Length: 179
Image (cartoon, rainbow, N blue to C red; front, side, top):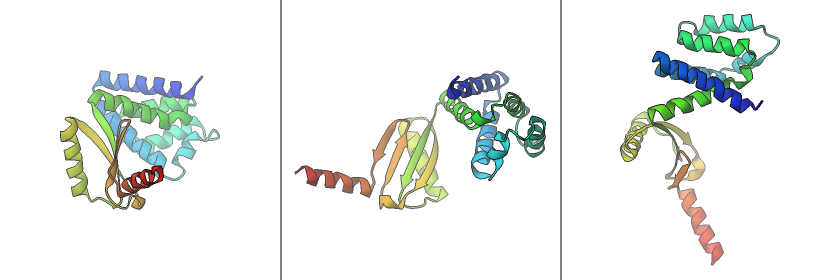
């Protein structure tokens, strides 16, 4: 069976349960935290996916580390994943749940690439401006890319707006080559 289909089924089941219990925001915060741990804590994902480590030991560690931090439904869901030996799809489940959550809450995901590091005040200002423009909520992530030289690239959904100096230089180059 296609693993992406499996992760969608698990995430949809978790999302439907969280809607039923009125805890979608709590579960979203939990999966965001867990996803960050899988990305940032060295060895965490390897620990979860290690077939040699017994399910009982994995669950005990998760309960001791996250038991008081995440919602019991989220913890039970993690235990279900472990019991079914599906740890390898955990990251996909987190991403799929986030997608269901953002769609239900009408939150759009936006990535802003800029040539310089943005401080929190500037980030909040940009976020407010974009939310006003689209008349909705966004989750803004920023990426610093000095190669842009200046300006920015904004990606939202499947659209991209390139207002970078690098982008303008590429257009000038293409124009000169065509002539």
